[in-house]
Image 1 (cartoon, rainbow, N blue to C red):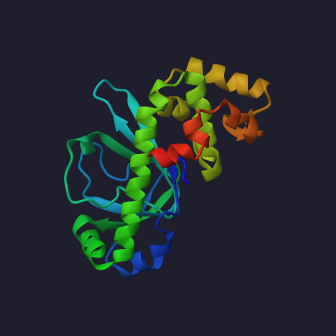
Image 2: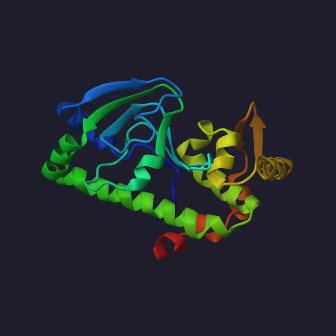
Length: 226
């Protein structure tokens, strides 16, 4: 059974050749560039060929909530037919040089209608994303800062997400202060669970980390419930 994911990659790799065969524009973004201008709705769908992008919700008070990370072989934003006001607050920024195949919504809609396998993959992707949002809202919200941190590290590590995420970004995902984050990392370091080098975090004892995590993060019963 699947556990929640913050780092999405490879979800649509099987359609790479198919995407190349359909009308698209090849785009390249430098580190720090946005895949579309902030404050604008989703007008294009990006299939990420290489690199990593970060999706955030920007609050009007200036704070941000990091929602997810997207690497090679996945789509973001994903195709849908309705417009939602919250899209105006979502930004997606390249964390490294990013190359994408960019599709118009109309063009991707034609692929959605013509390719049942792609349509099914989109449904599966949305299921995974909803699973993440439910997990983040219903479980992470009510955990203490240390438990939130352990859960996040446990979920990011297998996907290689820890290679792309800074400590500042960890704090923005968790909605916690840098002080609490630093305190939690120091505890895990002292127990030999992690080590840090130049801001990078490496899990050295995943089993010990799992023992600090909440049950919905490491036990299959969580996915059964959802």
